[in-house]
Image 1 (cartoon, helix red, strand yellow):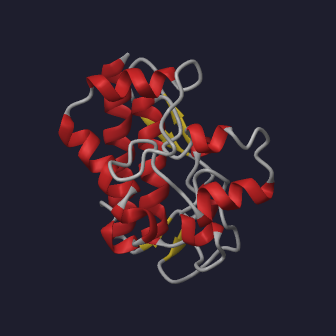
Image 2 (cartoon, one colour):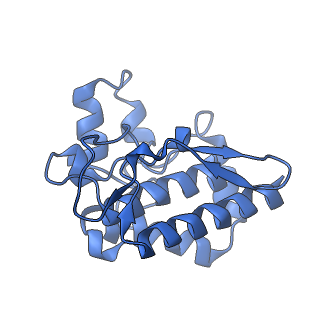
Length: 177
């Protein structure tokens, strides 16, 4: 239910706020890091061997599609700022049931090879609802959930994702907490 999804997003955000306040980062935030009770939205975070104190790296970069662009490009190792990007991806996927960077431009690649992933998620990432760049819009028949849910969520939610995936896409200091 929408209620359970919203509860799950709030629980995930609260958990990661607490983790970051403790001076740690998760370093491999992706869809395999949670168990979600689909009736209540309660969460259980697993795979916690990826948690490290800020400034330390456990040697894992992350999962394609969830990693911050600077990690994909090899310019950074995972940290709290890259966690914020990955968290925005998780929340977008929960709320809109699709990938925030996978639109028309990405599906033209046909096969997401390592080279194509590097291009679309690291070198030329474009948010599907970037107000300045429409080249990667969701495609009807492929991204129907994103199109449908984008219409029903309040503007302040959409604005948060626009900020995270436009200003924050290449500027970690612009990412929302």
